[in-house]
Length: 289
Ligand SMILES: Nc1ncnc2c1ncn2[C@@H]1O[C@H](COP(=O)(O)OP(=O)(O)O)[C@@H](O)[C@H]1O
Ligand SMILES: [Mg+2]
Image (cartoon, rainbow, N blue to C red; front, side, top):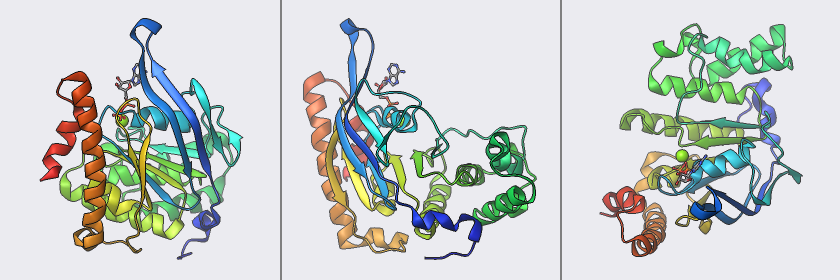
């Protein structure tokens, strides 16, 4: 494991465990109540990349918000290293699909914003750390540019840098590469997987793309139809470091087939129940070919 930058190497000692126990969350008044998450149980293991896959609308962002502490379960609990989540904290950093960069700040200023505000890193130390991280994400030459002067891929990398400088116990990624064109998305996936392999920071990555999920994951959590719970966990044993050729292997194909079958079954359940067109079918029928 590389330790090229001493400032960000402590993540290699990552021992973060996240437990979701019987988590339930729904919305609406009693008469129009919709259960979104139901009896959700999962343990996210230290130093692993756990990927949740499910179609749009199934409750992935709802789960992300619960783990991040932006929202709370109605029943059940979420524990980080045994301590219940009681609100947001910089031990958990979320990277969303929508950019959260502040447009009036440069890449560098965006990266140092959090630590500066909290005062936990200062002066030269903060400067050195920010420069090391910007270098790591390949943005050294763009550190004085504003978000609107960056490409979509660069913006996502600036987001990553902004999250990484906080050395979170858990990185939470909510469909972070959605909306990028196909080429940039692949590049970002490759870039991100390298970063993960170097740091092994415990990571919860959420996506609706099966191939992205298989490419990145140590553990693939296939979600059930709404109300969402864990349908199945598939251990992805493709070797690391990963590269895109591996997606053409027999093992990768088997993983994909297994995940697609599960998601398709879930889609059919919902289709039978509602008799209506469903997100699941939209999202996955194209990919079943
Ligand atoms: N604050 C909220 N109030 C009411 N319904 C919500 C709220 N947040 C999410 N939902 C509902 O929960 C379901 C899951 O949404 P979400 O978690 O955003 O799905 P995903 O991220 O998988 O696309 C959707 O049906 C959505 O309408
Ligand atoms: Mg979402």
